[in-house]
Length: 403
Image (tube, rainbow, N blue to C red):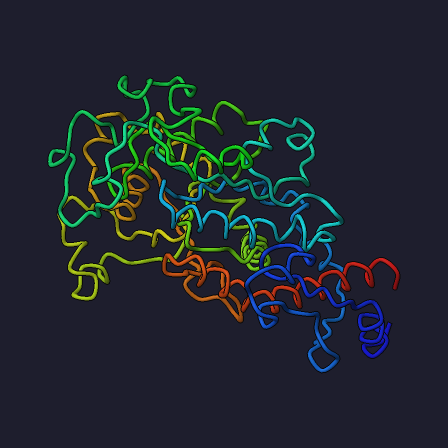
């Protein structure tokens, strides 16, 4: 097939998708957003044909080369966070279910943790649920001050010691090694809008700790996830991640990023990924000299908007690879730096860090400054390029099959 024939074939099959960022075509007319928020398919002049190569069609989510990623989307109980959770559901979390439904030959590329664990067919079919997500919230005794606090020199000794904000493996105050004790079905306190949300959305994990920003929520999440992957190897979860609720992912970029590093991921056990901030950089003025804190033992950390650990690394540093005493010893009340401390808490292992500070012509995650409307508009802006990528991928798959 020539390049011109390929181009004509793509154009003949093109259709005006015009799906708005609310998720469904029929909702566009009833939404409060203007027509500029809906994006139709590419025009002739926009088509940039990439001629198929034998390996292209194999670089898919379903090839089993890096298995699955479990992503905890951090949130809490407030009206703005409720709106951000809805924005997540109606944009990138719905992308593969309702918009890119022909991606990966119709397989379900993204699932909630709750639907994944409740469906054995999804678990056993390795092409399904390559991305598993859950919103992560504290479900323990409420403390409004903890929800808003940032690090800035805070320590566990400076807050109400009657509430638990950080749970560690084998800690008897958190249920020790019993994974069922690490979560609750219903938080001890919840707003009216969260009550209504829970009736129709079964995609929230409530940790047994009090909700907090910088005082141990990340350690608790990664420990819980490590307990899950350790007890359920059949889930084949290769990475566990943390994503802020005002960020969304470009899954095509993530797929390419992970596939391009498949050899690195195959050869290395202990992988730490994200947007790298080196200790020398964060020890400077622009970071408020944060890394000069003697409690920070790591050579670097990943910015918290999106960061991930390989399953062997998470299980090693958050479970029995280090002692409970060591986990307590490396504590620092700054979320991103604390994850770095845990990652580098065992000097006997070699941690391989991978950075996505710079990606060619693409982004991996997009930050939206905590604003739900900004979130929707930023997704709409990126939607067109994501759709072009999808069209090219679909064409490559078909032309490779029939040429």
